[in-house]
Amino acid sequence: MPQRTPANKTRANRRLPATDPWPSLLAARPISQRLLHWYDRNRRDLPWRRHADDPYAQLLAEFMLQQTQVNTVLNYYERFIKRFPTVGSLAAADLDDVLTLWSGLGYYSRARNLHAAARRIVEQHGGTVPQAVDELMTLPGIGRYTAGAIASIAYGARAPVLDGNVIRVLMRLLAMTDDPKSPTARSRLWECAESLLPRKRCGDFNQALMELGATLCSPRAPSCDACPLRQSCRAHLRGLTGRIPPPAARARVLSQRMLVAAVRKDHELLFVQRPASGLWAGLWELPCEQVMDGESLDKARGRLQANLPIRCRLSRSPIGIVTRQLTHRRITFEIFTGTARDGHRPPRPWRWMSPSPNRRGGTSRACEAMIELLEARQALANPAKTIKKS
Image (cartoon, rainbow, N blue to C red; front, top):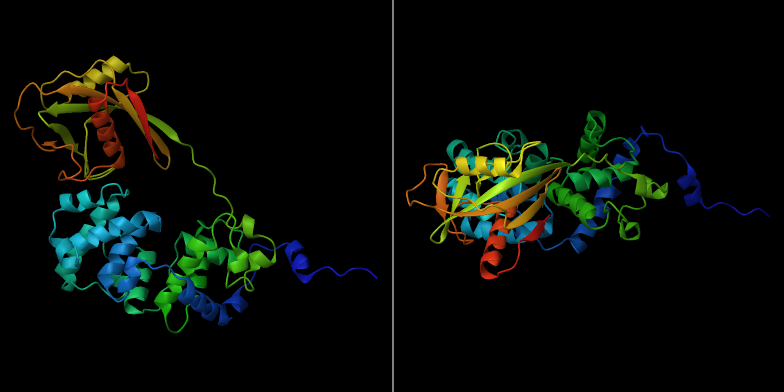
């Protein structure tokens, strides 16, 4: 008697069209019930979830969580909300103080947008975070996803969310093999996210989707056996989980070489504030110049020295190197030291500041690594060393 092929194996071998119809999946209300039940029993104890009815707490959390993992955000969030407990206190703060507290978290445009959004909330909304998605989206740094998260979690609005974790969960539920960045796929995913929303507890449901993607439905080796939606997941049933979402094409990484001037005056270093736009905008950094293609080290070092606002002579060779890996860029910083020959106060955007972490003004992680190297080099008579920061 011939053996029967298991039903699951038959489904796994069935090729899935890229435009597989899905309204029947969205009509299955048990999906939201199963997910909420799982979330109630398994959700992580995160500080902003203890204040789900505080719109400012959600606003701050969503800004910090953009392109940043939860574990990285935790300490920053606790310190930030302790220093600026209300939207009014944040709006009244100086931007330098905000950037100082944000230092090391990266993507500093978020801090500037958060500060600008707080000021607009105070000026135009009486200090109350707006409830409507459309109103939230008029604030700096807030798009559809962030607006939906704040509105649904803080106010219970029936608004969908679509971040990286949710996209992965929904694509696997629907067995979508499209490029998730294409306009057609993105529109379809937004429609799916909205159709799955329950009538009540929309904020919890959105957080449950994000939690599922962050904990079980991971990019690699997802824990399908523990997933509350595995019975409805088409990618799981058809053996496509490892292929969805399709891998993104790797962008070319460009190399960039920078020369840095670490100029001392007594116990202070010379810092310069970066422009209001571009990489590390608005942060205080050690002065630097890019080495142009074909340019000699001596010529680039001379240009760096000539552009300083004070008189000094830089060392002939670098005392150390710091590397910084950005998304599509790898920057090598070669650090030259010098001592100021005069004590006058440099004009803005230059400033003498202590290398201590308690200095006033935000700095990048790359700059912090340079300061660490300088301190180690001063304390130990070691040859120049390299510190790598990812």
